[in-house]
Image 1 (cartoon, chains in turn cyan, green):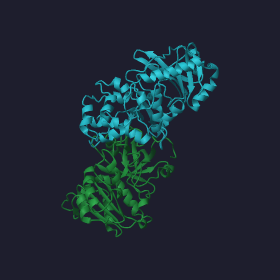
Image 2 (tube, each protein chain N blue to C red):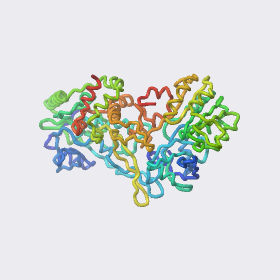
Image 3 (cartoon, chains in turn orange, red):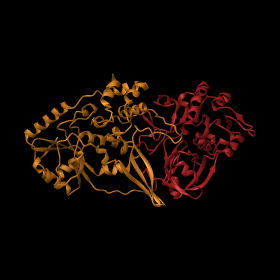
Image 4 (cartoon, chains in turn orange, brown):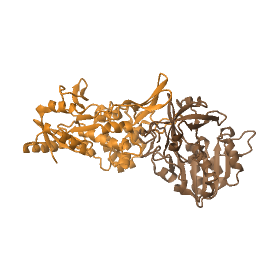
Length: 335
Length: 284
């Protein structure tokens, strides 16, 4: 393991240097909280925040995008820019979600060219968490405040410096290429990093996930799911804010003599999600839709991808208008 | 794919003919030819697969392929129009010479190669008969028929006017190398054929399950009541092959819409054995 150090006071110099090589996006404040935005050396980059309100997946899988256009004669793939983007300050849970989405969009018989292109052009520098939120349970889902999955480089925010650790080959190349921006770490800084990781880990909340798949297989009783879903408004906030939810809809919109084909995020919590033109709806009840969402994350994804499709970011918990809490749902399943 | 590696971009096709199949005129068979001839070879499908039909400006729908892989120069789909179907209503208004898109072929197929030498029972109901028609056209082809033993077809519809592919049904009934049993729930004055529901006809015809497999497609209610007589005849659950349908957007296992339990109908199916279906959650 090799670490490189950037003194915190030089952060803007670092951003200026990489802004010459790529588009740079990182955490800044706006009226809604801390958001992921384009940054320049003049931006006030924020390093103390629990997480972005919106999940990182939107960078690779936007909420709405045109995938193709029909000009009246032929359907053509929508062209998109080919810029390299360096993401700085991504929380490890969000970085991990991208590694999971890779399994769906890239490592498959059919690669998704839109996701794949943005993924290939991205360099992800994650930022280990200093202070997890009350709703964080990443340790339980196979990640952690300093989890490296999905990151090319992971950075640790220490008292006066940032410690950078390459994770992927791409990350190693990035550190090497920019070697002159960094210095070697002091022993004290390495110790500070270790302490940060262990203290932060101890602050995340434990949720029992082990055994949930086997327990879910037995939860076929519809009343269990009806009870959980009773207060669900069907708003879909949990799915739109989930960093691993990847359901979408495709549809055509008429434009002049032609049309555009759009891809939009969609949600299994919506009543119309699987409703067919005949009127038949395989998941007509809220409880059935609740079960689908939980099963997809904690049973189907483990079966298909050997991974729970939840990174423990807690967004679905804090956003739910009727306080439905996935941690309680899982506890009820395992009980 | 020849024109593009992007799995979301359809091949451009021209409508060669539109055939109204039923009295209600809500079932039409569309015959397409590929505008770029190279696309036809790239499309090359197998019986049981489906494709997304793209009507620009209206959208896409997943439809089973109704023509045989050995039908050269064209590909056919039979589409039911629903009053609430925003794509099927527009598609049904298109006519010969219009162009649109076909994206695919998608999904798995009937395991016909693995069934060589066997007796085959093909059971269909209503307009779910389309991919079975593809299989029958393939199996009855001069170059293929000899690879299989006895072939028995049982096909039913609500009424005589609702039977699909009426000319072909008549041809198959004349052939000595296939036993074709056509039934309707209720006949009319001119109907001289069999009356009765498909499951009952299966019990009456009693096809042997010896060295045999059954491919069965139909509405859920027909499937539900056809399985018991098939099992009673001795067909093992893994020798009963069927096909599933679900609403789809992408057709390539990404949009998260068509799963039955952990399986995506688009990618892991649409063809499943009854043994697999019994293991699948929500499956019935």
